[in-house]
Amino acid sequence: MSSDAREPSGQVWCSRFLQSTNLDDLVEPFKTNAKQFIGALRNAGVSVRISTTYRPIERSYLMYHASQIARGLEHADRVPVWTGERRINIDWAHRDNNGLPDLVRARNAAQEMVDGYQIGSNPVAPPRNSNHNRKLAVDMRISNFFGKNVLDAHGDSVEVNTFADLKRVGSTYSVFHKLDDDPPHWSITGR
Image (cartoon, rainbow, N blue to C red):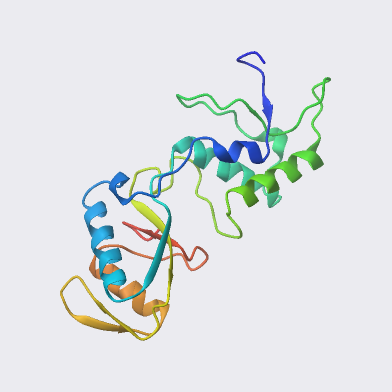
């Protein structure tokens, strides 16, 4: 395969440009704030599973366009070519030897990527627009919080009975959640 050859989209792309799950890959002051918030949750007996901290811009490009194609919001033969530093020679349109796109195959391959990235119905920010690209966000599943007393950043004990209570505690640490359609996403802005 020449360096200009394009590789069809599909699940194989999900193993490239990997994201981090390490809180140490975040930047200050968000790194310390997130660690303190998560520490307070865990100290209260709340379960926290981190799925993403830093996400390379290239991965965001792949995730964003895969989700747009799979959801019918973008045509695979109209995706802008990646112009970043690291190469992404992806053929979103699954072109045949005559250069004609197979848009059904392309949409199925995009859905494979959405499934591989475990995006579900969550929104995906365009590349360079995500706080994950800036190392200012963490995706985490928080469970077993009902009825737990969690210390906020001021040292006050807060009984957590709803997700809204969790959001209020997080905000005292400057870790915000504002996207109701993206439950695991917490960031410096909530977006």
